[in-house]
Image (cartoon, rainbow, N blue to C red; front, side):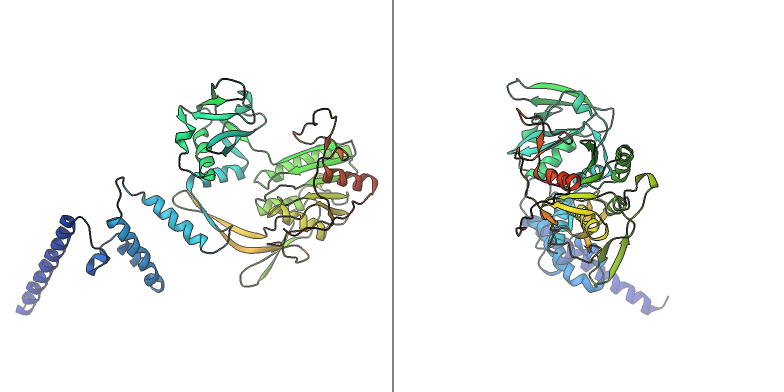
Amino acid sequence: MTPLFHKLKRVASMLALLLIGFAAGWLSAGVVGGHLPVTSGIAGLLGPGLVANQATPAQLREQFGVFWQVWNIVENEFYHVEPLDRSRMIRGAISGMLASLDDPYTLYQEPELASQTNDHMQGTLEGIGAYINVIDGRAYISKVFKNSPALAAGLQANDEIIAVDDVLIADLIADLDTNQAAVKVASKIRGPQGSIVKLRIGRADQEPFEVSITRAQVIVGSVEGQMLDDKLAYIKITEFKATTTREFDDILRELLPKKPQGIVLDLRNNPGGYLQNAQEVLGRFYDCTALFETNGQGELKELSTIGGGRDVRVFDLPLVVLVNGGSASASEIVAGALRDARQFTYLIGEKTFGKGSVQNIHQLMDGGSARVTIAHWLTPAKITINKEGIVPQYVVPYNEDISNPVPCVGERQPAEGQTSCADSQLAAAMRLLLEGKAPVVVEATQQ
């Protein structure tokens, strides 16, 4: 080796020792002084964001630098007794980033909620089979599913869940908002089929009691149907889930052989769901354009209906679609498409919600999900839904006046002293289909 090489080697070694000594002295001063001055000199580069920021695309590195600068400040200066919850910090940052886009449908779901949402939209879940509401820091059963462990155990709507497996609800959901609390309670009650959960239940005029329930796989149905007065088929879709098309076809195969004169399709309070299932439901009523999709570049894409077997086609029967302010997203697509593209179809009810946007759902590595709006929907007549809603041909405000008697549908029961239920919108649909009497048009109010 040359003398020059040895000289350079000695210089490099001296520089390395000087750097190590400087770093050790800086760290010692920081520890002795009780904090690390991460905002000055080399300190700003020694935090956990250094490697992450180097992985950031070069054109964004400067903008991300301030994020990691703040992260390092929090890591080294924030007063805390318990360890920092870094997962919560990261999820909060993700939520804030998506919220900054000012789109209410672009959002982050934390792992527990993402898992529950996915189970719900698949149409099945493992648990006891009940919906939970949280009101004023207390958890209540709002609905018990048919053929569920909860029903077999005797649970009822409005029962209070005081404790789950000896954990008090009050302690479980302390300091959580209503939505977070509902997710937490549901997560505690759910579990693998065959496992057992113990609930302490409060019921009006009774002492609290305990019940042990064996969890099972529960079907969360989205379609129900029946004949009305042996002349009309009534079908209600509560949501467009992965199982909706199969359920819808089953109902059609049950009702169509009874030769109905018309169909009432009830989409009231249907918040939407999967686009494909909406296209498949439309494919039972006609064969053509289902909707148009427009992206941020103004490009228009046509999407068609998706047909089924001949035994589930109802292309010619008169149809009334019931909608209201709770009809949103995929249910608005179905209502708007049927109005625009199918003959003998009428919309009755109230102006719909006006959610006409498409979201991609990305499953994230932490178990959460990111929902990102990628496009807006237009009806087959290229009418905008988003923030506009759909005004039915016949605007009929909802009421339960006894002057509008109808057969009780679903789980509804007659009011005390009555032999039928009352529903102004369903009554108007039945009169239109059976008697040809159009409802009196009421001017739609702005929402």
